Amino acid sequence: MLKRTVVHHTALKKSGGASKMAQMLHQGLLDKGYDSKHSFEASENHGEELLSPEKTAQAVPENSIVHLHTSADPFKFLHALPKSSKTVITLHDTQMITGGCASPVDCPKFERDCAACPRNFPNSQEVRRQRIAAILDSKAVLVSPSSWLGRLARKAHPKLKPKIIPNGIPWPEKPADKKLVRQELGIHPASKVMLFVAHGGEKAAYKSGPQWKSYWAKIKSAVPEALCFAIGGNVNSREGDYISIPYVDSPTLANFLAAADVLAYPTLGDNHPLIILEAMAQSLPAVSYAVGGVVEQISDDEDGILIPPDEKQILTEKTIMLLKNSRVAKEMGQRGFQKGKKRFSAQRMINDYLKIYDNLV
Image (cartoon, rainbow, N blue to C red):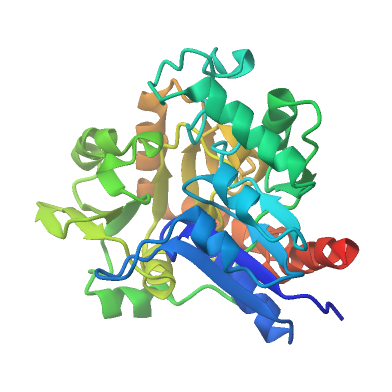
């Protein structure tokens, strides 16, 4: 039985995939009887104090295992931790191994130490050097949810050798009943429902958010009965059958996924996105660009569809195809549910991390 407290740390309390993962691991440890805490620098609740990385690090109990997921400044956070702590770091994106960007997306400067950053991250070369040095100095166990990001970490510095632990989520015994969920959400049973989902909504550049409406216009012209929910921004609005919804909690998101026929996920750079797993858990097929760790989740033409990232027209065509062919979409979704239940459960992920915590002790 693990005797040390495990402190899961994130920059944000609950928004974004990294915060979801930290909360999931935190709750999973509590459910198993372990001593676990969740610390963070910023809450989404107005009026709550914004804490510095150093202040949150200094509040960590002595002799803890600190599991760093994200921080506004990982360098400052890691250096302010008690010397008695042991450290685990999960790379949820590339910010800890670059000059600041969440995904290099084939940036030529990545293999040149992020010097003269084309995206204008300030002091990018020095920021990258500091962050990688802090990881190495902390003697942390480094983890990547995808082999893709693991390879990038080794390219960033040869001494970075992350273990691969794929993300997991709580997996239901069976997907929610689509008819009942649609009734609850007020969606007509005959509607052809598609989703866009990203933290930041239409402002999420890495998820092609600014292009969502142009994708939708082509899809709607081909499938007049289509209904689209764009989830994750900060507005609640409707333009015809294009409905924008702000950030929703996990149960509400699961309902939208269960009610939909297809998830369109035009990500330009991703690690091991939870939304793909959450869609699988509701038997919902995804049409996604074949980038990053997405190719380690979706098997093309079996439980979803993968598109070369420069083939925008094909992404809309495949989305249209699944909206028009409910049998194919349903069969893909069912295969994804069964595969994900075996490979991407929260229980499997928690057990994998417990082995790391035990070894540190």
